[in-house]
Length: 395
Ligand code: SAH
Image 1 (cartoon, rainbow, N blue to C red):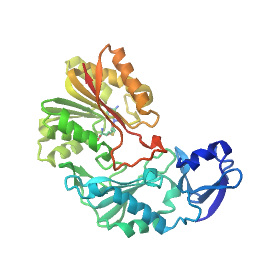
Image 2 (cartoon, rainbow, N blue to C red):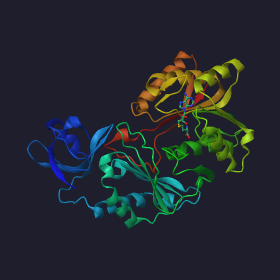
Image 3 (cartoon, helix red, strand yellow):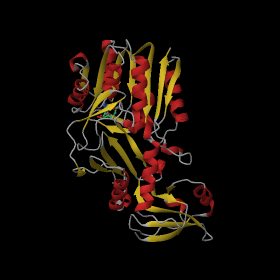
Image 4 (cartoon, protein in one colour):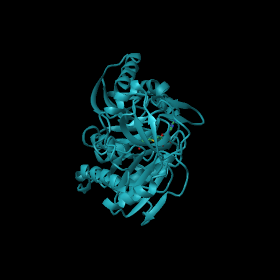
């Protein structure tokens, strides 16, 4: 790879010396036209070495720091070591027979921003977040094979400017995975598809939330799962003894996918309500029919436009909560989740508080979650911990 030396502005030098991993345009004295993938050697204004990284355009920045050691070559051996360290940290996951799907490499949290790797029962799904990191693909896959013998490898290229997935055949090498591939999480089966667009059927970062719903908040309860996708939260709830689940997602595909998630656990999908409907339309319907639930789950995408509504977490989460509060039974639980990068946990808690105040209702936070252990994050990059989940007991 080509290398170029760039200068970090004086007022930003310290943050990089202390380990902040993300490079943005504004911290550089100047950023010439560069081929993505170029190695960036960064110095302060007095030409003192600070760090080395690479150039790759993502919506959040223009590249990532990889090392603070000037003599460290950015070669295959370097990445082999990174992968080895990452996999060593996850030994408990590799040895847990009840859980066969988890993240084995989490971007900057494991020392290489722009790449994540998920493990699905021996198969790997790599996600590339820029053209720049994709330039390093051959070496990175060779490094991966130094440390692991996967059954097969799939990739998701998410590098148009907004991190959108590029529609393609995602199979890369090795054995082709069965469709569906059945993975386990805390003893529950989930059907996943490794070559079916951007998403696989399960969001691995919600593992601890599913477990908590199953172990503590499901027994004897009725559940409304909004933005339900493949119904993963509902399956966990049903496993934990929920009496009934209602699944609402605007996408038609979520009906067969949700049925399948119940079926692969030997549960009868017909015992549950599974609907293709806009959540906001459903709230109106539930209001008319005076429906109410003991456990309401809210895990919307940060932004979505349907035929009937446009939803953004930034503008509408409060409204979503208020409508949920109205159909949650006394002493019921609302699971409020978001991965919206614009909200930290504090801001999210404020939104919750405001919604309850508007509805003139009281609540107690009974559980709070951020990313699970396999989604490693680092102290110097708090924004890498994007997940916020609150369990709210409605008084
Ligand atoms: N909570 C899910 C993941 C949700 S993914 C889980 O943990 O598995 C986001 C889902 O929201 C998608 O399936 C999408 O179809 C759905 N969606 C987006 N806007 C919606 C709306 N207005 N009403 C209902 N579903 C919506």
